[in-house]
Image 1 (cartoon, helix red, strand yellow):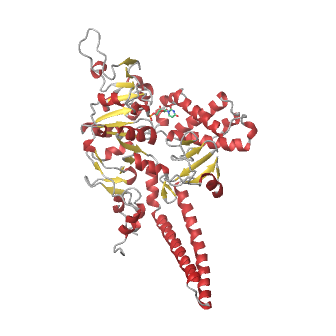
Image 2: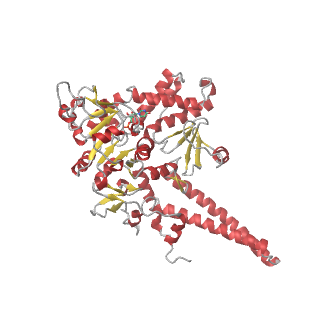
Image 3: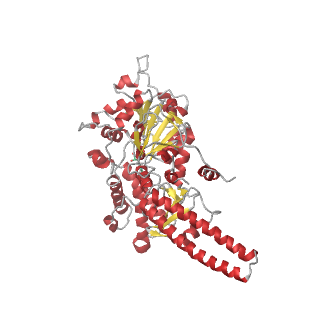
Length: 540
Ligand code: U5P
């Protein structure tokens, strides 16, 4: 098999990367249309063909899509705020106040088993490959005993399981693991009747409250730079889309006052008082705040659409998305004229309002960019048929590591096939011993050969195990590669493949490609095709 095949995890174009001769600066590829080289970490990957010429509106989620929060400050703040609520409002022991948060420990794609206090990583077949109880790894026997039976394997969904599928969930997953450990070691210190599932429920409610009661947002408002990454390429990307004739819109669950603060920061406003600065609205055609996604994507959702007055945050009634005709004024006023802003701002409503506001006739004309596989991507694609792009910030590092570890992965594949060959040889020897009636001499020869092979098999097995562990740790200790679980795609990767037409590490990567680009995936291969494609002269 071609050695370069190893890095061809998502896109065959990677095979043609410069540096297949081993040169040291390979992490770029040539974009065919313009000859410009784009780093792999900033590449947009395509699962399903998408011709940007057919897209008339590009929409964005805000939090963790346009705005990349710094987990070391933002999620730490959520973590600390949650602990305070657990202690002061819900009666958890005061020693929790001394706990600290390792923001690098949890990763997206994990599943919490609320009842058992376990944290799981599974592959696309829902086979649990890595399992921890709190911070203690489960033995293989325990893991297989609990989750191994394919017949009873459940769906790993709510209400008994919680999916860690947004970056917002990393702090609560960590706190849950800490509480599980704490309860195991100090059963008397946790109130009677509070089991693992109840602890999860308390943590979830407390985190959610931190997001809603100002614990987080007031701090972000004071010093956005401390909590959000600056990204000077967002504005040029939005301008590029608009210059090419595509409408742009924002649909966020955040409310107007917070949205205004974050968007001012992202769009580079240097004004100290952002409450009166709405320059960033010029980059959008419609802004919808407080959208209550994923309900927003359902046309039958009857949420009322209000117009927001940017200066005051006041909500005005609308006539189902149209301006209310003024008394004594025969023509309905236009939002934009009335407000003197580049685009109208709303709160609530549903997708039909948005389609009407942007004159969208077919949902396949919309591309929506979000970070939440369920809240943004799955629902908008499945329910509506919008085209989707998922933002996965973790991808930049993952792709870099994939490149750097290509030799180790080659070694791993070699060991795996060596192991398989030995296994086959052992089988043949056993077969000969049993069915070919060898004479005493041959029998002895075969038996000693068999013993040698068994030793060799053990040596290769251990080397393979060691190499696999090293590679796993190189990506993430304890969870390994985000998109892989062993040799299979992870459950997270499987969802990305199914629901995101495109995926990339940062929203601004859109600006690195033509707004007319025809995104195409590599050819699909089934397993039987892989072998044939790798052989130059197939032995048929
Ligand atoms: N949020 C919550 N509860 C949570 C996590 C997030 O209310 O447990 C809020 C965030 O603070 C943000 C919004 O305001 O949801 C995310 O919206 P979006 O921009 O991703 O749509």
